Image (cartoon, rainbow, N blue to C red; front, top):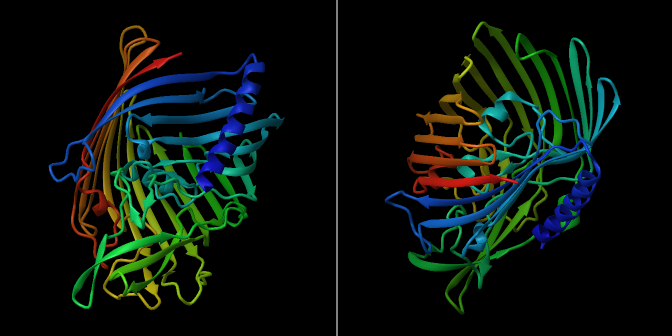
Length: 451
């Protein structure tokens, strides 16, 4: 129900926006029609119905540097014969008004570079994530009012909002107490548990939060930066907002008449405050720096006594990096460490050695090497590719990602993606999300037409 209302609101905003664009002679909007096929190629893939899915997609994107009144970045796709894989991703849609030569007022949903660590690792701490594919999350902008001022030596951004939109995860359905198979990206709770040494089937009830309570939540923040990425740069950021990830509470009982377990699931919004610091320096073709976040989540979650629920601890995240930037290549190395941030469950159903349902961070330690290539060929032909390798000893996983876009005319382009995952088992000491997707190696290929 809540998703349906959000989609209606999105359609209304998009319709108004397109009307404004239609009346604006200066509007620069790129529309792409996409046809692509996504295949799961892991030998251990647990096929729901099939391993290959076909999509028809459409994207609407404003020119990056255009100063149009309305700007947007929206994409969606329909999976043929698999409705649980349909998606709509509204990364940005906002109105902007130049108050003066160097001051801008913005209303809507806009992506901001709040923190370098969060941008590089896609943790979704500052801004919500589009997680149709949780392994390849994409940041979405915060929704509200922004005021930006760019001065000669510094820039400042102030943000405030009465609304909150959490992470957009994989679509799921519950039918007769059971999570429906149909979306490989959705990680279902177990169908059975062991009670009194007997394997017992489980029925689930999902308690939806009140829509008004979920959406109308206050947040505010500010960003102050000095210098530029081309020389030396320092940035301070602060944000007080609801967490983009919801806390999951649960309670259960044994239905003796049916000899089945009944588990109620209840998502709950909780607040946290973020303090960020970014430092970077450019020296020739090299750029290096460090980024940190101090994350302080709400401690007193509003769950009734019957609910088993998580308790959070403060965390400090740090990520150093170095880049080599050339005309056709960018090579980067970066590391990540999370100190603190433990999650423990409390309540009647809490088990000390079981992984909690709510996990604050996808992993706690990792190292990543990435390479981006950019080649301008004859005429309008252009080839862009990105390759990355992420590995963690502490969390026991390896993740390879590769994508390429080949523009062979001003109207046509082809694209492809490859993802490979190896991961150990999730345990209380190894609370990482990557292990849930270790059987979802995939290969995508498609074509796009600009109109």
